[in-house]
Amino acid sequence: MSDNEQVHCLIIGSGPAGYTAAIYAARANLKPVLYQGIQPGGQLTITTEVENYPGYPEGIQGPEMMVDFEKQARRMGTDIRYGLATKVDFSVRPFKIEIDEEKWLDADAIIIATGASAQWLGLESEQRLNGFGVSACAVCDGFFFRGKEVCIIGGGDTAAEEALYLSKICSVVHNFVRRDQFRASKVMQDRVMNTPNIKVYWNTEVDEILGENKVEAVRIVNNKTGEKQVIPVSAYFVAIGHKPNSDIFKSWIDMDESGYIKTLPGSAKTNIEGVFAAGDVQDKIYRQAVTAAGSGCMAALDAERYLSLMEHKMMTEAKTL
Ligand SMILES: Cc1cc2nc3c(=O)[nH]c(=O)nc-3n(C[C@H](O)[C@H](O)[C@H](O)COP(=O)(O)OP(=O)(O)OC[C@H]3O[C@@H](n4cnc5c(N)ncnc54)[C@H](O)[C@@H]3O)c2cc1C
Image 1 (tube, rainbow, N blue to C red):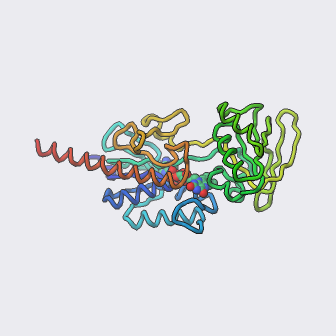
Image 2: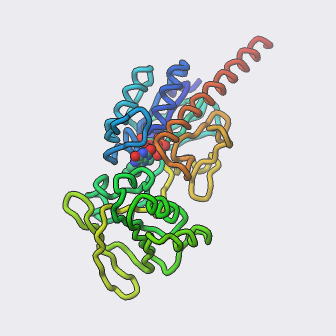
Image 3: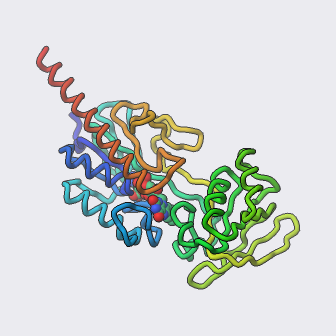
């Protein structure tokens, strides 16, 4: 046996998926150790009000909700640690994981719940007004701007889908597209173009989001003519893509072309037996806290079954020797 610390069930990530996996794993006596990464609590710690997570009838602040998740995981007995998984070796069993480029752990089973990060244009005002009208999730935050004029940035399928979603809630949706055409599929393009309250602006980039404490307008620029224009809006939605946090698993785990981990349909299993994935790192479609939590539960149940099977196999082998 190596000198590395031995961990029965390792969970990487502390968003809704990681903490939910931890609650289930701890209650199944898998003695989970969870590493939080650089963003303890995950993406919801950078938002304000969450109104669509069941169980909070009055809504709740994102950071507060994630403190509740953490408390529950800790109370069930999860060993929660601040640290980052920096390298993995899945060619051996137990699996090897490097933490903070310092020490290595041996883990019998692993749940990857490292989430995804929204891509932003990189404007200072995007950060300053994040949660105050700036959002990367129309399904999460559109409702707060019902009846208002909003804008959405992007010309792909996600932007088209989110523009259509917003068009049902908001009075006008200004859709700014950098090129002179959509990247979205033809069917989505047609739906956007046929929706009367979506106004599409071609060759258009956002120069600045205006507003002191909340979004009040955007200044746009036509990248062909250089002409600038100020459009009053109450919210700014960016839909130019997400990046799954999966780089360190790249040479081991099957992924799609964008880096989303592939799981077997209806399960949290990856191509490597004993390695499971949950939450946004394996979900480019739904990307919600409740779906992340649900898949975290699936990952813990799959890990429990896998570990039981392994123990049973080892006992049977020992008996036959
Ligand atoms: C601004 C905003 C508002 C949102 N509002 C809502 C909402 O109202 N309702 C809703 O349902 N959803 C909302 N969402 C979406 C929701 O936040 C995500 O779907 C959800 O957080 C995904 O959970 P997750 O556990 O998969 O990952 P994340 O929440 O992304 O957490 C990932 C975790 O992995 C950790 N990590 C990453 N890499 C490593 C590593 N190498 N080692 C260790 N740890 C690592 C990070 O530190 C983090 O703790 C919102 C998202 C954003 C950005």
